[in-house]
Every structure is written in C-alpha cells, then in structure tokens.
Length: 358
Image (cartoon, rainbow, N blue to C red):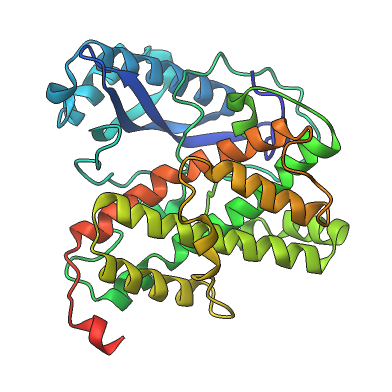
C-alpha cells in the first residue's frame, strides 16, 4: 500500500505513460527480467493508471512463469501481445511494450525503444487522501526511474567517439544525481524525522521520477530543492550534491564494467560524461568509494548520506533500518537506466582513436 505519496498531492493528477521492471521465475528456475511500458490512449487518473500497470505486470509475470528461460529471451513482441490481449478494455491502453527480456545476471539482449512521457506530478507535500492502488507486484521495488534521458531509441550514436558518448550521457548523470539528492532527502524526512516505517515496496514510492526533457529535471524540481536548502542550509546541500554526483558516476562505471565495455573505453566515457555533467568538479575519483561495494552499496550510501544529514552523529547500526531500506529502493531504481545506458555504450562500437586525443 502506498503510504507517502511524494509528488502526488495535486488532486486530479493524471498519467499518459507508466513503466515498470518485471521479474519472474521461468519454468526452469532462472529469474527473467524485462522492462514493461504501458501507454494510454489519453491521460488517465493516476489511480487508474497504477491499477492498470499493476495488472499488466502480473500478466507479464505469468507469461514468464509459463516458459523456459532460454525460449523466453527474444520474445518481446509475443509477450507484449499476450499482455495487451489480456488487459481489460476499460484500461484505456493504447499500447504495451515489453523490452529487453533477459536472464538476471546476463546483459539485456536488446536496448529499450522509445515511449511517451507521463504528465508532470506535483511536488512533495502532505499525505494525499486519495485511495491507494491495489497491491504492487514483486516487480514494483526495482522499477525503472522513467528518466526521459533513457527513452531514446539510440542514446549513444553508433560509431561515436569517446567524448561524444560521454556527452550523450551527461543528461542521464545530471538527472540521476537530482533523483538521488531528492530521494535521500525524502527518505530522511520520512524515516528519521517523521519516524514512518514501511516495506521496501512502500518506501520505493518516495523516489522522484523525471517527467521533463533530459537534463531539465533540476529545473522542474527547483521549488522543492529550494525548500530543502532553506531548511538545511547551502553547505549541507552541497555536500549531499557531491555525494549524489559521486554515486551516479560510480553507477555508470560499474554498469559499463558489468556489460563488458573495455576498461579503457569505459574510463574515457566516464571522464567525458562527468566533466560534461558536472563541469565545476567532476566527481570521478570521489565515486571510487562505491566501486567495490556492489552487494552493500545501498548500506554504504545510507551510512554516508546519513552522516552528512546528521553532521556525523549517526552510527551505522543504531536504529536506522527504515532509512537504509528506503535507500535500497532508491539504489535499485537506478539500476535499469544505467544498465541500459551502459549497453548503449557497448552497442555503439566507439571509435578508439579519440582516446589518444582525449
């Protein structure tokens, strides 16, 4: 049950597009994952949209659970058709798109295609009185951030130089850093200040989503950012921004490594992207603190950000479980976008000569 509707306080809010990442066990055991997009004929109330995509996620899970993992890979069109045909007509769905079916632990077999953006939600505010949607499927926790920067058919141009590839990823880094900044602040306000607890699926609802053109997420969220800055002070906000910059750079680096981008190319792309996104101080080296913490990444992010927010007074394991759980949801929500971005780098077949010049 959604209990803290950040960005949901405006009555009559609607959505045109929703996206989730769906996981399910195939008949032979492995976990199969794909990204599911649902586009509506016209903007629908949020509650209806949430209920529709919840149903769609359940249908896609059933599709996965009825097939062998090896046979499911590559069946995106059939999966989408299966979900679309089983959805009730009252859902007002224009199209269903299933993208990048792959076995968890292996690279996605294809890059996601483009989709339409949802209408902009309002900023954080008091708890809404609207009824919550139905129970979330198990795919809800690691849902994609829906960043517009990763909705392009070709995020990194084919045959790009290292510098060009980095420049193409700068919007993703900037928008993701704002996503981390606001996610951390909301998690702290909810779990530490207000002492609200919940499941990981519940806490995932605090993660803000981008609904504007790539690179403009901070402008969209500027009123909320200013409110936090007035409350916490510019110095603390700067420290949190620096931590967010370091984290997204670490995410990009580890994602490129996981999909098999050559180390020298990955290093060049990361440097170019970081200097383009954060010209006042590219945080590539700062991200090293997260490089070897794949399994405990969320825990490390929680410890480091909580230390900033409490001026170093928060201990690692002293009653901060809900905050760490919220950060786990925040970290999980970034993985799909950065995996896609890294896969795009790999598929672009970068031109190597630019390395010597850069």
